[in-house]
Image 1: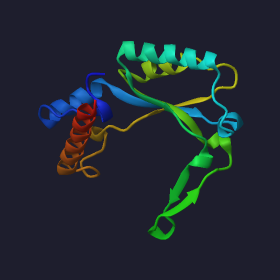
Image 2: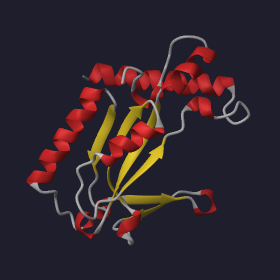
Image 3: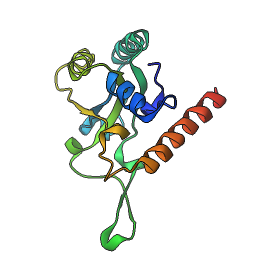
Image 4: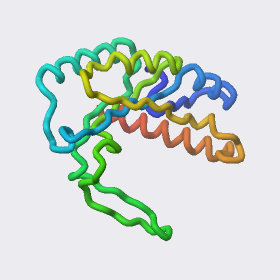
Length: 168
C-alpha cells in the first residue's frame, strides 16, 4: 500500500505527486447483492474461511485498503435531491441485482492486476463482482479541480490518514 488511504500523497510538488499517483491506481470491487444477501442470510463458514484467506493474500501483497460486507438494504437509506433538496427513503430497495452486498478497495499498479485480483475472489457459481477504477484527484483537469481545490483535497486526505493513524 505505502501511499495510504484515498490515494493521498502529501509530499513533493504537484508534478511529483501526479507522477506518484499514476504509479498506482485504486479500484473498488463491488459484490452484487442477490435475494440471499438481501434476506440477511450470512455466508457459510467455508466461504468466510475462503474470504479470510483471500483477504490475507491481498494484505500480504500490500494491495488491500479496505473490505467490508454490507447489511441488507432494509437497514439502509437512499438519499436523492429532487428539486435540489435532500429526500431520504428508507430501505428495503427493490431490484436486488442492482444493490451492493460488500466491497474491497484495492490499490494496484494496473487494471490488469485489478482484474487478476478480482478473478481470484473465492465466489462459486452465481457470484457477481463489479470492478471500477476510482478517480484520483490528479485525473481531474484544472478547470474542474483548480490547483487550490486540489491542495484542499490533499490536505483533507492527509488529515483523514492522520486521524486513522491516531485511532490505531
